[in-house]
Each structure stands twice: as C-alpha cells, then as structure tokens.
Length: 215
Image (cartoon, rainbow, N blue to C red):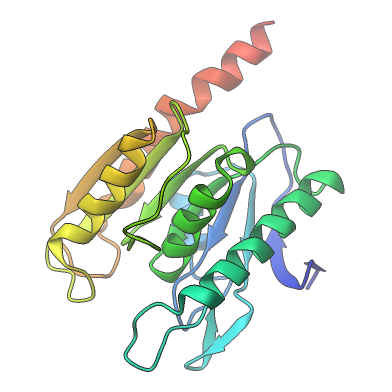
C-alpha cells in the first residue's frame, strides 16, 4: 500500500477536474470503511482514502481520546497539522491536482472540522458525518462561501442534539455555506445519506467543473 507523510492510503485515478474526496474513517476502522459510501454517493469521483495513524481498538483513529473519551486536544492539534502536511505534500507531488473535499465520519469528521479551523484554504469543502466540535470556544477564521455539509442522526447515542448544531453555527459565523441534514438514525449511516451527499456534490461542485470545460 502506498504511503505519504506517514499516512497509508488508497487512491482512485483522477479522470476529470473535480476536486478529489479525502476519505477520513471513524474510530477503530481503516481506509476501507468509507469506500462503499464513496462508490454509492460519488461514483467515478476521484478519491484518496487515508488510514488513521493511531492504533485504536483493533483498528485505527486519526487522533487520541482521553480515558473518559473526551478529546485529547493536544494530540488532535498535532494530528491536524500532520494531516495538513499530507494534503500539501499530495498537491506538491501531483498525487492530487487540487485541494480535496474532506469526507469524514465521526473521528474523521472531528479532525476534518479541526483542519477547516486550522487552514480553510487547504480544502475545497467538507462533508462532516456525525461531527463534534474540536473546540467549541475556538475562533474560526473567515471562510466565505466554503461549502460544508453536516449530517447527524436524531438517535445518535454518541452525540447530543446540540453537537451538530454547534459545529454548524461555528462555520456559519465564519461565512461558510453550511447545509445540515438530520436523519432518522443512530451513529451509523442512514441509507438515504448517500443520496443526500450525491445531490450536494452535484449541486455545489459539478457546475464548477462544467463551467471550466466550457472555457
């Protein structure tokens, strides 16, 4: 399996000008977890799927938690910088042609949100599934029009009803174009969410590609 900046990854070939998806799995999972979702929601869309660098419960995670399961904010900050370095190296080496769309689930959604706060310019946008704010009190840099899709579940036993709303409010205050959906499900994916992602991607990104092709 290829690796860059210490990350193992799976990659699909870039076949057009769409920004690639950067798939960031949940805790105790690996780089294969989100491939079925990407194949269903974004068939043919270029992607990189990363394996988190932290061994965790028989799988992997992108950052550590404390024994009480609260976020290890020091490690999250360190790992966020590491992910940012990966994206910069991926662009510089030609592995990807442009900053990616982050697609993160749970642990991956939290580090995706942290990366947006750390450096909005290194991403084209984000899909945050079951997110939690990496820092509820953080000052978020302005990101006018940055497209962000937030997906939450109304019976999620790992999140409070306010968690996704707080993440949305943080990014909306920074000027991002936030779209939120609440599905009738727990922490797991709902069958309808692939279609929600597909519609959002086509609405936000495909017209930009079509415009570029007409020039």
